[in-house]
Length: 564
Image (cartoon, rainbow, N blue to C red; front, side):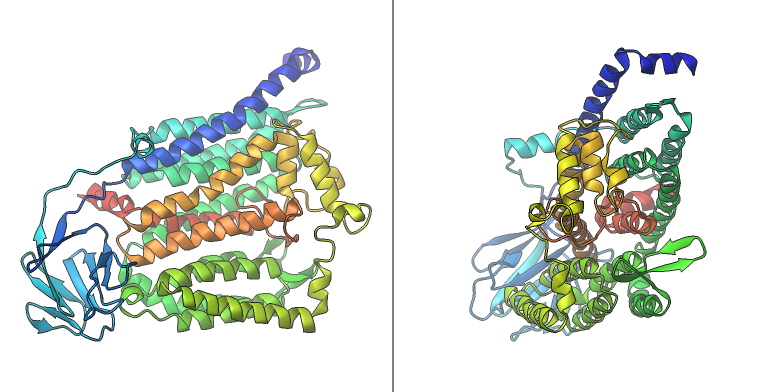
């Protein structure tokens, strides 16, 4: 220890710590990028296994997805531009038993081998299906060559080893922990303990997934592990107690992550528990209103002794689940009425709790799910119009809401009162430069309220630099790329929509936090996923990751293969 202290007092230490601050964002960026490229490389090619043949015209329609819409509309996966065919005529979908066709309420109906069907019907090779006046025959086909762009070919190159990417993420964490331990008063080994906890949890999940479950993909978990470690090490430099809370929340989140993946493996179980989960979410809102404590204008916390919970964070998981768990009805019954009522109830409760930021997140997630379920731009426009009317009424009859945004865009006009928080954040964020001042060496945490929670992006940029801050944002935003890749390969619409909903939720929440901190948008008080202090946020974010993981078709296929 004396030797370490002497080194820290020497002139070499600042240079060494600067090099560490340069290496950390480079490692983080490399891990995040290689996780996505490895994810793309590990996915199956979208070459058709079966095709549909129009015997009369000779036209061939490759079947590329697990669920393929059939109709006259250009947005359909199999477009039949014939007047007798409805815009959304049917869905042709793959299940474990084989290929099924189902009428989606078309005028002309669907015939299989000349007989009209009333529900999902199993179709075998050689069977004919008639949609309006068009008859298509199902047959096997050899894989066709796929034209690739150079960049796409690069992305589909050889994937990196999951072990190697986890190792690189761990090294980035360790370098941050070394920074935190090298305090102005000497070397503090206690600040290495949070990283030890992160290491145990991350590699424990790796051993469980890759060893016990025999999975071959670990990209989503690696990114979540990378971001969690960055957040915990950042908070550890400010307060060990906060870091300890985050570690416990990370453990609970990983347990929830594993449970939800197991739970969603059985589609019948998902359908069975849809209603109880929705009712449970609403009951949790009621409980929040009864037992919740008002803090800084919002009644969104429940205190049980020393433990504090934010129910709305966990309701996010239930919200995504309820919105996407109609299974085959997503295609066969394009109806969003039930989900619209559930969304209205959730947002109503959030307004009663005065948690406007979370209400906006719920609404944005609703728009993603509603569009993917209805496929109608007109529906979304009507919903947005109704929302605009609601906002107008709220601002008219609830003026205190407008007062909360009075300083938006004018923080520099009153830097010592209404604009005090954000002017400090903007100033300290800029002072960090590209590589920051070092963990624990910033001024924001000791001078500004909520520096480790709502304003944590400023703290991250001040102490670790703008470069790492941008990499964190890009890593969270990158989940949309994972979701986009999964949409066409997921084994059910449930997983496709769930992945997009979660990715959209996290992206919108990140935008609200970062843009609020930088005064681009009003400050809404939402957390930055994985980074902000808040056990409920950390645990729920890991729970949301389960939807992205489950949407990867490799997850359950590899699991089943490992059992034989």
